[in-house]
Image (tube, rainbow, N blue to C red):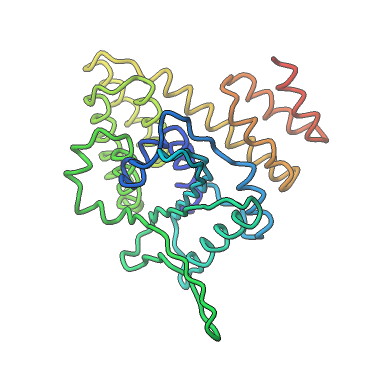
Length: 310
């Protein structure tokens, strides 16, 4: 069985960045109302990477640190943490506290920490950390969203036009069908059919199709059946998302291969190239980078391949 962490983290990270305003509107509507959305959010990947490295807490693929502006005119930083796999005796709340104070310590910025819990344990709801001794007290509380709670709110998800309604449906069905791939194929088709019937913009549909495809993985025989039925669906609706969707899937697959190659060959230093690699959409260039990984001896040699391409 695949590791839920690797299965879920990366697609969540992508969709969170593409639809951050929708994310806040869907999960944290009160906070969303206080933000000035006329000013584009800024994703502080380097700052977050620095804090995580210092804290020696490992690389968290689904974490995002975002700079936003409030309607009051103030600038604010938001740390969004998506925990998709809970551990027994988890130190999650402590980890949230460490991330929060590390950011404050390094950048002297007030940070609000928000957590999305996508695990399968209904009772696991860590939302505070603290201690006291000799009259000295530390208390840290943070808002959480438990995706499991949406199982009883399915009709709300179906009625919503927010892309994160589809994200939550796909996430819940990925968990529910982990040990029943035939049922997973049926749900994958049902969700894709909803996308085709929703009348949303082509670009949004392609992004969500990619999310569903990555999350609801199928064995090869069922995957072939699924694609045949998607083609029939396209013919019925006279829409053609599939060409772009397939290209997107190939692109993501190559990026995943490059990421693994960088880690194996150059260790942690190789991860520094990932933001640049993830920005490349040219499939032939990604193929050239993956092939070059076998022969290059330095990161700079690899970088020259795509820099010279432009």
